[in-house]
Length: 209
Image 1 (cartoon, rainbow, N blue to C red):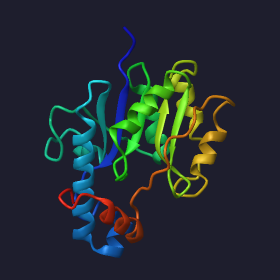
Image 2: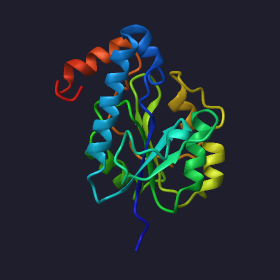
Image 3: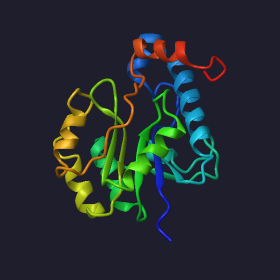
């Protein structure tokens, strides 16, 4: 039987004053906390119901990874570890059990289970898949970990990536062999500032946030 696909949500424990600091400066700490807590909780709920993948939460700060206060205790959790985003994602990609892995962020209001299904479908044919973000980064990365050894891939995949810039996706793609990637998924927006927060609020179900 082939290994079960693994979906990893990268998230921060929703502590007041610790999550979405840039957003908090613009709309206030309490509003930013409530938004992120509601958004991440809703995402975990929506993506935990499928039998098509194993859901894992990659949590920062590490000391809160094992606590059940914020999310259902039945969902496995791992600490993200130290370093920049590339180091943390690379470490998990190298250490998770065999099989395809998809990593997403917890601040993507438009993310649906259908996007995850599409990503894993692409990984049956290709080694990598990305969900491009509106700001030049990406809200999803998926790796089949089939042809390319996980540890070697993780070490080189994020080398030199300019995080939090319009070049993050292009930098990551440049580290992959030609022909590795499948077609990109839908372009979605993460919520980092007041402008994107207002757009998310306008398009969301009011009961969620």
